[in-house]
Amino acid sequence: MSALVKSRGAFIVLEGCDRVGKSTQVLRLLEALTEAGVPNKVLKFPDRTTSIGKHIDAYLRRKLELPDKAVHLLFAANRWEVEGEMKSDLLSGQTLVVDRYAYSGVAYTAAKKVAPLWWCKAPDIGIPAPDVVFYLKLPAKVAEQRDVYGDERYEQVGFQQEVEQQFEALRGPQWIELDASRNIESLHKDILAKALEVIRAVDRQPIGELWTDDAVVQSSS
Ligand code: DGP
Image (cartoon, rainbow, N blue to C red):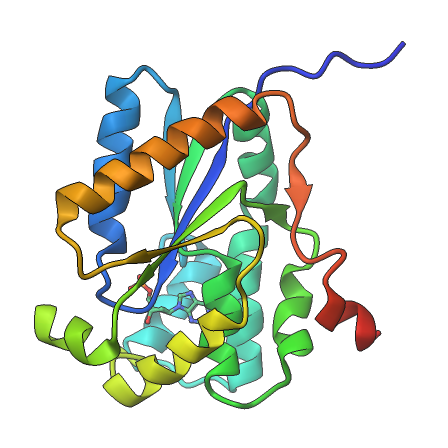
């Protein structure tokens, strides 16, 4: 007898460079989903509270030096350590709203030009795939003026421009690009409308796996 497919939650990711307004939109979306009666949970990567996350935090604050490839694997491990929890939350009907995901993982390391794209993607192959990715796009020079960059490792205009280029190469069918220079409310309205559409659509669909059928990964194996 085949198992009954229960109604599941949607996996929603917000991506983009530093200071494009992701966290504000994540918060607005959560409030609106709660108001609409949609069970939801927020996740943020990197999650700096776990033991792996504490190393990442020290690295980002320049308190710890690590080789680029090693830190890449730590960021990926920080996502894999909650894979089981993400799946059970989704299957129990909770919609996940996630601030950054594996796309940041690939874009930030690829921007350093230390490894080819397939290598950057490899550690995240098979991790749960988002049902929709809202990519907030804003030129790095504008982002910098919005909110002054701090002391963290990647907060430099030149590097952010490289990251932006790498994000462009990661677009997939679930990818929705949004102009992040628009005002907060109009951006929120668009994100909410699409999110509600996706929540209704994925209801009984299985959870996907990221990059298992990716052409770049397949051609290099
Ligand atoms: P945030 O807490 O969202 O400001 O992210 C911290 C910084 O870490 C930010 O500059 C983006 C970067 N980052 C996020 N995820 C990853 C990742 O998986 N790999 C790398 N190398 N950097 C990441």
